[in-house]
Length: 521
Image (cartoon, rainbow, N blue to C red; front, side, top):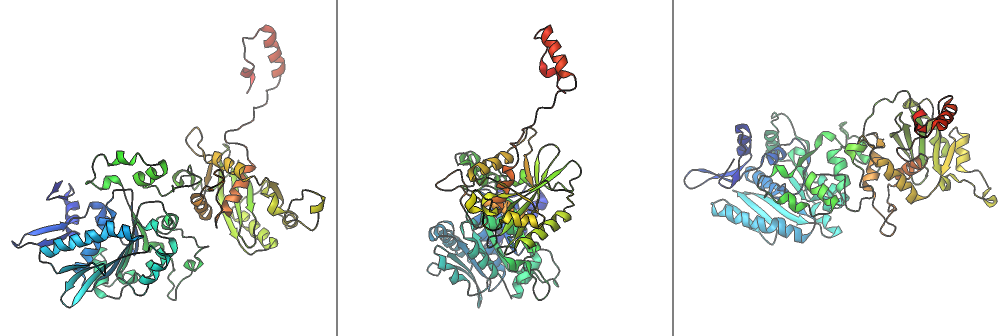
């Protein structure tokens, strides 16, 4: 139900939680009057037990409003509270925060509260006697702007529309969310219903990212906050532990609170229809909170909810082959493919190795094959160019890589380097079977490959080709594996049963009433 321009949940328990997290003040008549009442989803976000928290998703989830008022509440309750709220550009900061912060400071000051907005400094200030709580607003329109915000720690840092930031500056900001104030730790304990003896990570400071899907940091945000599978190849230090034995990346500290259109009762009934005019990829992002689709994405048909499956142990009736994209300076990526009894394909595992000679690669490939309990691998496929396959007499100088692999027990067959043809084969495999299941699935452990698929963009000139990028090596291995298999759904016509030819001839003599196909088994 709603009243006084605020939405209140229809259930009593939900209303009580909203009241506990609201920003309310006593008016001149002694009556408690709410200034801000969070929606139920915003309450869930406000008390989520995570140091690093991603919120939002679909459009219209009131993310910017939630970010500001969540900081206001902390600034009123914690003397000396220091926070930073960011947008990517100056214009976005002015439109979505600065003008509203000035207006909200005026309204609060009219109620007799010690609030001011310093326009030049871009600061929202709340005076607690000699202490002042400060919420600074900033932007990173230029690459060097990040340096202005790394000089000191903050009790809270909020990046609004975080996907618009570049990944590295965004992660650099997260490091500065740390506090030594006892009041900040006490507030965190109360929000998360923890005992006074518990010390929250980072001293109770929080790093919030509010965002729709898509944008430069979309993949990184999904890896860190949603899937809890950061790219350890790109950030190897995350796999280490500190002096106290704590992992540098602790999934328990990273969380995600999704929000959908249905979570905001203030939206007009026409809002969903308004989104329908957007391009399909953007509609999927803003209507359904889909982090799998981005603008220009090459494999738009890839959906982790469909194509990423844990099939467990694969028993009898399964045939196996491997695909490989070889490199030394660039990584070598190997995939283990299962051909299932129904003709579908499943990539069970991936292996990434760098700066390894072929003898080491062969040893590692054999070891992982044993760990997967694969009794026999039909073949391993690589591309003609990287394997050094000879095409004429002049090339017959020295030993090819394929020959070296063979000497170490990994026979290699080669396939075409026709990239666009290979991508077509992959697209066909990502398609759906008549029963609605895809022809090709990947095990959840193949994070390097999944990340590459979702990051691949179409080339600006050759639209049917993938634009080259740093981590496209898993795609090349997949492409070569796909090139060795027939198109989805293709099957051979079963052989005629015994004596079928004689019976067929007898039918022909009797007349054309009986179909020859009736004799097939």
